[in-house]
Picture 1 (tube, rainbow, N blue to C red):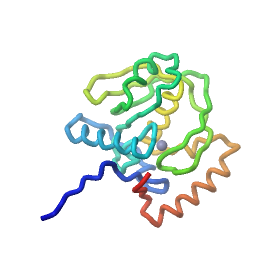
Picture 2: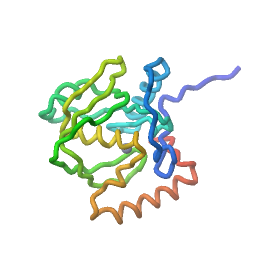
Picture 3: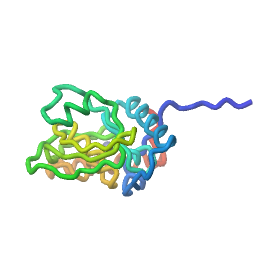
Picture 4: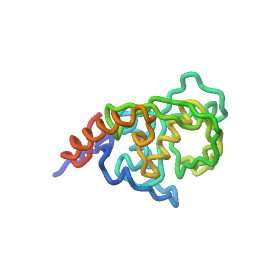
Amino acid sequence: MTLKTMQPYLAVHVIGDKVLQTSAAPIAEITDQVREMAQRMIATMLAFNGIGLAAPQVGISLRLVTLGVPTRGNGNTPGEAVLLPQMPLVLINPRIISHCEETTMHEEGCLSVPSIYGHVERPSVVVLEALKLDGSRLVIECGGLLACCIQHEIDHLNGTLFVKRVISDEQYEIRRKADELKRRYGMMNYIRTSP
Ligand code: ZN
């Protein structure tokens, strides 16, 4: 007899892995398989204490992200008012359809780039279009940390890590640290199995 053990969370792929540099494919249909993947990604995001996770980070090259942005402050855009109380939230085929000129700087980190943080400047407010897990379509204006997180996760779907976007003053140091991570995780096939 064999005992099948179901890991509650998935392994996270780390900088250096090709899947993180690849543009992910759109999801054509929300099947049971997609719903199960979303649930396991939420479990993974929570286990690793992340506030967002994109499917390529668990080795799946599809356009799906999970968000677990904290509700602090609540913000002043419709997106923050509506979406923050719905966390953890699943977004399918998300895209930014417009953004404001004004930018905000946040210090970002990423489960795929463990222990490295850097400042990134991004549009302060974006209009997000996405499908929710129930198939309903969402078009909503988002600001604050939510806007930052959405842009960071959509970058993952396009094969871009935040380290490429850190402000120029921090570029040298972040590249040095990222190279060190790639060497270390290269010996483990760029896989991180525990938080
Ligand atoms: Zn990330």
